[in-house]
Length: 462
Image (cartoon, rainbow, N blue to C red; front, side):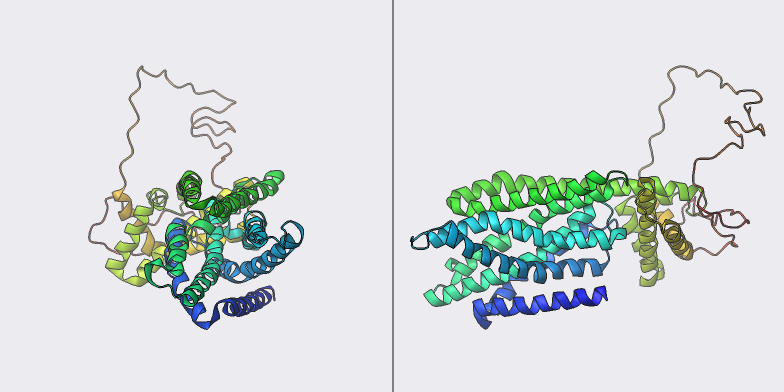
């Protein structure tokens, strides 16, 4: 029912937006604006999908984000900005003054539009953060969802601006490079295609930091998204206000503020993505020690290069179906690592055990195809540096005597080899299975993974 209501709301908003834009631009202007506005969209979405390669979000989430930005957020912005401009005309600006309309438009674009538009776009991020919490793990997820939402918003807005510019050119007889349409496309489609995604990505960073907060950090999870939303509004207002400063003022704001902020956000997103890869390596080590994974896999799964090598190897030797199997194995392993990290933070939810079991079963079903490919891909990784030799001879180890538990003693001690308590992985154990045939590749590594010697007892509980 919730999904049906949401689809109906977005569809109704899209029809209203279509009617409003067509009323202002006409059919020909709408088609021209649509054709020009769609050009930068594939590039922007490809960039965000590239950033999201470690743990790709489901397409339904991204489609919802784009549709919300293109339909619901744009409709709210058009209605609210229209009322705000009319209110400014009657209260702040002098309607009888020749520059009254210009003053109202300037105030609305600088102070009202950023508040309305960023709040409308942030609603999509909030909805996914609340209702799709399993797919929201950190800064990268927030930036991707916010950027896709803003891309949809900019797409519809560009249709309106480019269509209106085309109508103006038709009235005054302008054409070619010197036309208003060409200038508008150059500013919005070439110089600043990432303007709206940059603003809303600030909100996404706040929600990403809130997702990475521990369960007891309630204040942080509430205040960070609000602070990030305010930063997005300020940045948006600065951008809109620069248009009133003339050509040089716009270039100064563009070079001194927008480019550095864009670079800083790009660095932060890439750093967060690398941090996710380190998390994959660290968290999967426990499952490798328990027998679910082979020794090369935590390292191979923590590198985007080795992931691609494993998929390509499976595709060349066994076909596209094997490559898809390896991709599904990689996705399940990544989700498992991020799920375990959320469990350490206390934000995994009550279905952690069930979800963990589902992901482990998915890995176990695909291991025959994926594990040899990942082991072969791990050969491309540089060998770790050996530890430096000790500067001085180490003293002989001291083994405590009974009753504290000596070497190999059966008592409840903590010496080497003692059966004392273990603080490692204590979750489900792999099921007992007979050795299965592994696919043969052109070059088989010397440490090709073999099915681990697994316990025959019942599966443990986490």
